[in-house]
Length: 225
Image (tube, rainbow, N blue to C red; front, side, top):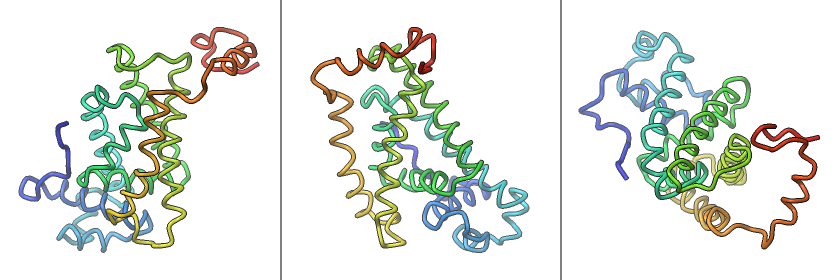
């Protein structure tokens, strides 16, 4: 798969260099970190960051946009081999160059509030698109409710990583290879088993549940009676 790591320093504009430094720092320390720390990492002044982005909120918005763009640019290539948004995120996290973006994603969700809700909704909307492309390509089984399935898969994967993070007593763990190796070691095999082999040996529970849905799920969008 084509690598989309942080761009080489020599190729970065000042704006991109600050954005990438902010993604790493926000992912490591959360969003309470000050502009001075980011400025030091990027080799600029705090005033320079304000000049480039207007505010800390403006910088965070640029970070969001970049993370989403990386997901959109790589989704189809990964999709052909992995076939689900949860496994896609796990695959990204296994590559050193992508870990800051996954850490940034976890911190964005961990922060809560309206920004976190918007961030999640954006991830869901993107995932619905690339899963639909996988269904069309014949590499993913269609769902009766594609959006609900995407929310479950993203929630399962990100929730697993957030649980691993919350259970860790080392505040710097997210910045270590050991954290990612352990978290992904606990996630990848069971996730891929479920994606490829299933969990239940028959469809009795599914059939029983479908009796309580008033309309065909594809039309009712998963509404329950």
